[in-house]
Length: 482
Image (cartoon, rainbow, N blue to C red):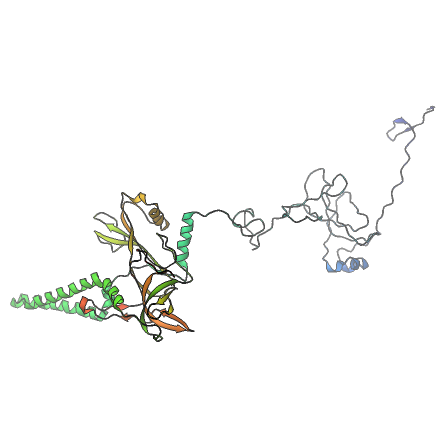
């Protein structure tokens, strides 16, 4: 075309006015010399591996590269982190590993190329996998993909999120603020007292037993003699019509039966009377292994107790007994509960070691009644509440008490008795003196102690197998401050 205005033809055949654009000179590309492929072997890296201390690191094989453009960083070595990436179309995906380190012309610093999207300046965006703790500046290093959550410090792999349960996201114990449920706290307190090795648990009631008072040979001999007397008296009465032998045997049998019934009814009172009349000993002159009685003021040890119903603190002995009255058609509290009597349904007795200050000598002794020691408590109990079908809903404390012990509260006549020995009460202890490294202790006797016959009360002899603890009624609140 003949024209004054210059024009040129584009590659697509279109003619445009103007001169063709001159091609720009390409900027020189700084690159390193081609390095031989080492296959991840440090021995083949030569001086390059020694320069970048690759002999102290484990190299990983490079994964296959796809037909994707690669990015080179100038003045440094190329390093990329592999991992799963998002499937977004606008992201440029790179995968690989530390394959080689190229020395730069400006220094020995190395840079890392991170997979992921680029910002508007052409630099990789800074992303972090998972939450970061406050106060810690995140590093420039970027890992692609999703990182697994931090496991607890125990290393135990559990199902569900880390935040569930009693551990937080860092694996530490989670602290729960607020007050606990009263029922849960009461059950925890009762459980701790029942399973504490320092606490002696007594699950049976102290009752006078004829079998324990009389030796078995004497008991069986008396039964045999009475049987023979009745047989002989009956035979003589039938043969010669003489009833003298039979009458004598009946009178003797009636006297023995009355004596046994008397001991059953008054045996426990006779034991408390024996403990009260037993003379007090002076600990200053008491010998090691001597059976003594000490009376003094109580001081708590390392594990004080608390009564279950009235919540009396700093106790060394607690007792809670629930009784039920059985009528004609009422339920039995236990297997031996007779009609028209009170029967024991539940009993809880706990005891721990404590100190006693002797009135006679002023010395202080450690009384060992904890850790499962053999104990015979004679502690007076007071009635704290009487429950019948009409007023059972008027005491929420009682309902809470029986609910903690999984006891039913249907139409029953119940009575709760509670006894305790708290710090400052006066008690009497009968046991054996033991001295160990200038420590004065009173421990249970190794053998049962026989009380002998009490002729004035017509009481048979009995044996005391354990340390005797005697305390009168403490409901009046008269205590000595310690």
